Image (tube, rainbow, N blue to C red):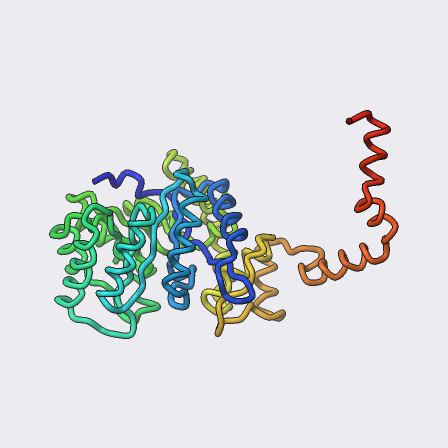
Length: 338
């Protein structure tokens, strides 16, 4: 089983939606190109930042098909699975593989607090349902309420052939390091899950990171990785220090709203989060984000649309000349373009 592609900066892509909370195809295709052009090594769909917990299964399938098509083999597409029941996780894993996902990433069940035996059987059963597909564990104790233990991860890494790595979002660098140390003998690949600790995670042997900032500053977060693997450790650390204030400014906003706030401020036109979340309102939290990101549009989108419409209404003669073909005739006569 080839796992060489499991490395670098993988973006946990945000999910652009329209007013009906359906995936905006044009926007998600644009986002795919944006992050690939920004240097990411992979795209993770329907992770925490992708708001998996509110996306219907048919929309997940549609979104996956669109992204796989747009990525067109330029980078691998990972599919995030965060369902509680083993049965639903299996269904999603099989769907993802059938639609071109290179790997699946499975979160430990939320709301429940399973025993080690239950968790082992849960992950093992899902992996065995897609035996030819690399599967990653996703440890997110902050959202789930408990962490995967080192013993559990070691057993899964050594006993289930296609559980080949994990994303650790604990923020505990000792725990991340232990996941790496205890499973080096089977080439178990660990991604850091905290943007602010990408450099530190790689110092302990991580193969890269699954990084929120790649949604809106892909060049900066990939700079941390690229300089590190090139041996420019000081340059990598400086890139990390440049990123961290921006990333930390997001902590005051609602999760995962801040990632969409950032993307919109950077001109990505990602839209709003799924309800019940709302875009961050004007105020101290958004002001801090704007201050750290160092940029905001001179005219916000809603106001810009109003001004654009007003300009056209105030220049009806110009519009008539354009729509009537008079301007086209002028250029043909002037420049002999026929």
